[in-house]
Length: 302
Ligand SMILES: C[S@@+](CC[C@H](N)C(=O)[O-])C[C@H]1O[C@@H](n2cnc3c(N)ncnc32)[C@H](O)[C@@H]1O
Image (cartoon, rainbow, N blue to C red; front, side, top):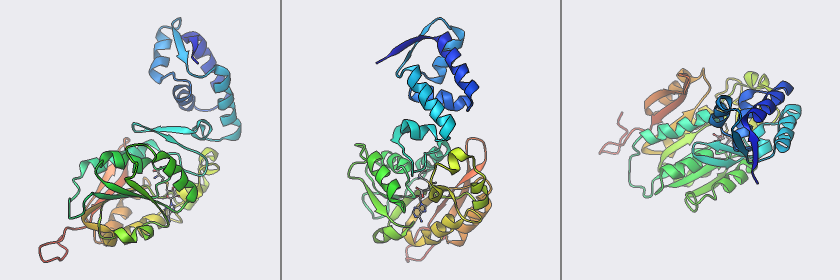
C-alpha cells in the first residue's frame, strides 16, 4: 500500500516528531528506510511543498515506531529490523551489533589489496567477530570464487549471520564457526589469505559512558574491549602470523586513539607492510598488515 501526502504536510509531521525529541538524522533514516521517502525527496519537498510524496508506511505507524524509540531508547534499526550497509540490506535484532557505516571501509581496504594466490584454491578468507555477517556477506561479493569463514563467540550473532548469509551470493561459500577468534579456524591455519575483523575495541571506561541507546541495547561482548580496549586486538595480532598464509593480509578496525599501538602490535607479531588508514573524517581507524612472503628457501623474508 502507498500513502500519498503533500510535501508540506510531511514536513509539518516531521517538525512535530522532532519536537518530541530525538535526532533529525534518525528520523530521516526512519522516513527513508521504513517510509520510502529519501533525504533527497525531503529536500525537494522543501522547494515544492505542494507536490505529493508517496509513503510506503502510514504516518501513524511511523509515529508509533518513533515514540517507541524515544521512550525505550531502543535503536531504530532493532525496531525496524533491518539496516542498510554498503549495497546490502541486513536483518538486525537485539543481541547483535548494528553494522556501522565506517566499517564499510574495511571492505574498500580489502578491495585494494591483491591477495597472494598462493597454492590455495579457492581463495580463503575469514571474518573474525562476524556479528550480523555484514563483512562476511560483502567479502563473499568481493571474492565470488572464494571460500570464507565467519567466526563469532556469540550464538545469537551466528544465528543472525546465518540468516543474512542465506543471500545467493554467499550460499555454500561461507562457513560459520563458533568460538574465540582464530581457535575455530585451526584447520585453516597457515592458509588464510585475507582476514577482516571489527573486534570489540572500546575501552571499558569509555563503554560505561556510552549513550543508553548503545550501552543498554547493543551487546557488551561486541563493544567492550577491556581496560585499554585492546584485549581482542592483542589476541588477534598474536595469532595472526600462524593463521595467515604467507603473504596473507589482516585488516582491522580499531578505536580512534589506538592506531599507533595497533601498528606496534602487528609489527611485534611479525607482520610486515603495516599501514594505518583513515575513516571518512580523516581519523586513523583501520590497520592493515601482511604475513611476510616465504622466500625460495622457505624462510620468512621481510
Ligand atoms: C564490534 S562487533 C562486530 C560485528 C560485525 N563484524 C560488524 O562489523 O558489525 C564484534 C563482534 O565480535 C564478537 N566477539 C567478541 N568476542 C569474541 C571472541 N572472543 N571470539 C569471536 N568473536 C567475538 C562479538 O560477538 C561481535 O559480534
